[in-house]
Length: 98
Image (cartoon, rainbow, N blue to C red; front, side):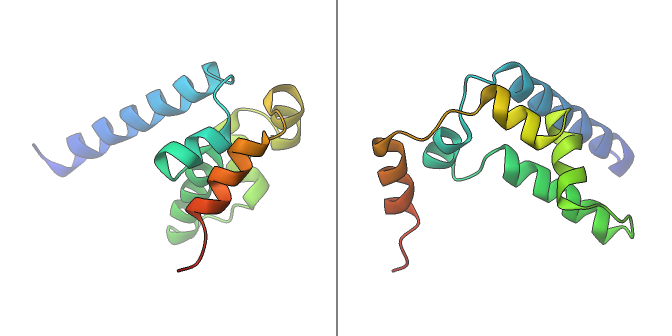
């Protein structure tokens, strides 16, 4: 497989993941962090970092909007629930410095 085709396939897989996560707004970011160690915010940051590496200026909020499909504050207001005590404990336990 040539590099251009591999890049196209990787981009298609990324778009499918992005779209899937947009459809599954019931899945909370904290659950993703607790289970997989990354969330939508990580993906939007990686997108922003990739733009920056290529000389494209993009703010954190612009990266989030590109990933979420809307301003992050609106997405959070519409879809993000407060973390439960158990979710917060699991997150804190996973991120303790050793």
